[in-house]
Image (cartoon, rainbow, N blue to C red):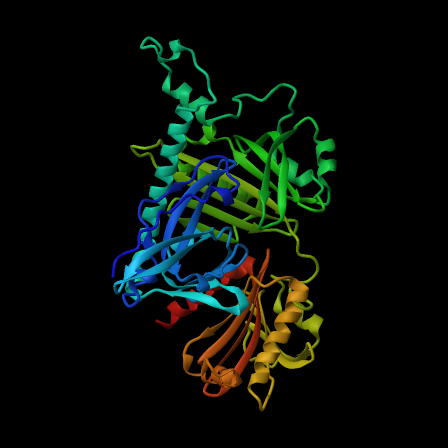
Length: 542
């Protein structure tokens, strides 16, 4: 069967970027599937671009099939699921289609290709092994790309290599376009052999538009002073008027996922010893302050050792906010998250080593994001509360014989259930509703699941993912047996809501003719400490 060759194109129409897109040379096979050959063989292509000076990696998943199966559109969801049973749910940012013909069994076959653009967390892709990728279609249908164990083991290294190729491709394009920019006009003397541009001066002109000194008319401000004194309930106009000496109009920036935008920047701000520009992000509709993002001046930090810069900034931030709640130090990333009562503190620090194509560089973004959570996180409690405090509030007897669990029965949404508070080092880190319905018709369990999904959606908004999963397709064509299939473990349902401080998941699953319906709440602040504690418990058993 002949291979079908498609030209992968840059999806610049779907990206609000300031420059080109760099693309890795070779597409990665996402599935070992020799049966259908070139008619399927889904692959992924890594691209890289920069938006407002921030590097962004995209993943283009290409699907080859007939046109009737390409009902995938922008706004649909993609679930990347890993062998450790974690998953990442992403929105499709673009889904263009191309068309070609090929010869199969001596006849012409029309082949369509849909390219699905998403922005995954590449820390996951370069560390974890992908179990499968689920792509949402219309009418509740999905495409499922499964990986074999052998293929899954190779993918992280291939993703890391593809990232480097995409970045190198981007740097080359930017360098070429900057040098031969048709908008610039030079005299003939510019190309004279006598004329030589100092390399450092050239780099400064091409890549560093921030002035080396702050104008005398601009008042210098420490970042912590700004975020401590600013009113997080203020609107854009209030901020512009209050800080008029430091506020400047900037190119429009948008964050579609957070429904936020920035039209103003705060200049003259220092983060530690480093000069920065702070972008003021507000709600796209209400114009209320959502976040402040401090971009350290690149010419200040590009010549610094990334590990030393990371340690310097960590020491400063830890002195202000304590140890980070989430830490990621992998590949060429030093990322941190702190969850405080007022705001989330996020660090995105990424660096690139020098190569024959480009010099070493790095960027460091410090974000303060308004804490949107109000009131309690689960029932009467907030994350981090002690078991004693919550038991006093609930006033119900604990039936669990475990210091890390507070368990009792109750009715929720008109249904009988067990309520479980789960603690890590006596701090609330997880909670569950374990429903106990008893139905003769097992399809009624699915109705319970869908009712709870509907109720949770009314409270928390649209689901981040919601799809059935077939583990054995024996009863897939018989809808009246779906409930029975769940009881056998052949079919399961899951949906989730990814929040700022809390992740919520509802699961319907079964085994040995028994069906379980559970709603689980997980604190993002304590998730890593909970995982660490569970790992320590496993080590003790060895």
